[in-house]
Length: 84
Image (cartoon, rainbow, N blue to C red; front, side, top):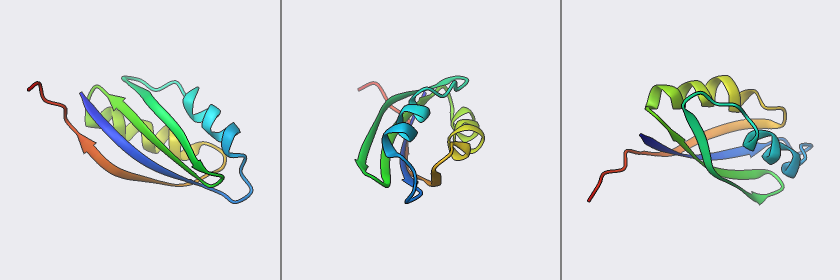
């Protein structure tokens, strides 16, 4: 499992709440959003949990990047949780 932390920037004309709802509703193979939060009218942050990093790549490039209103998606961190 990997946790991928994303910073998602939106177009000025995008409706942030509608885009957030669209992103939360995406069907992602082997991935799910732990959380998606609106920071401002043009910025979202999200935690995407995936079975492996390849699944995360596919989710980001093939699904999230194609959502209407999304102008840029930055990967802030990729974490492989360990059991302590």
